[in-house]
Length: 241
Image (cartoon, rainbow, N blue to C red; front, side, top):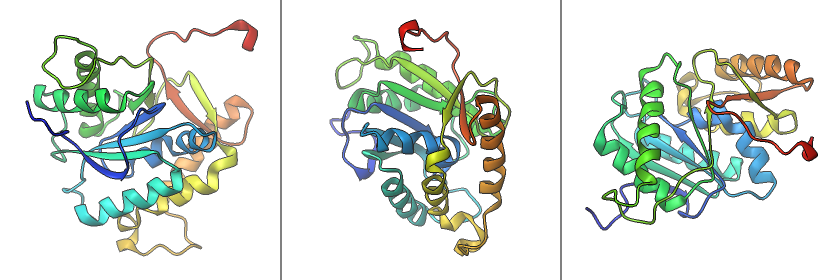
């Protein structure tokens, strides 16, 4: 076992987090859960993002450019920490090595809530991240696992929408943070029109996602909402309703 963390920090410092979003590639967290992260950080909650790969096999942008963009987006989102696991782009899957590396991060930043890609996503890396996360969550809580750090179990796992439909059963009103949400996505400039996006031109990914947010908002009787799915029943206190 290495004595050094098997991950890199691209923004902030590793610390106990309230919520942590797992992103297969740079920009996935902003697109899938950026509004929720903005609302949480705006309320003073320590939130973070962990990229599993550098997106090095993507058509546009270099790993160095994308790392700089991640740091800029982290500032916009108000993240407490952003990290990079450095697994191979295009090959994210449920492997023992990857699961141990991710479990080590979970023990380091100890999130209360974990956000991961949905298991019905058509992108193989998003699907692989979901299954890798399930194994890592199990390992992180095992006292006898060959891992550094104290065991940790998250309280809740939320699945975010990527490239497919989901059976949303958790909606978050993000209408008040849409400007920041779009700015965080635009920070990943290498992914849009060769790195040059005019402020008067809205990237297609923003238009498409905004339409989804408006649809989910309609169901919640708000203008825009981010959608998540939980696989286990939510326990609520009726006095809070």
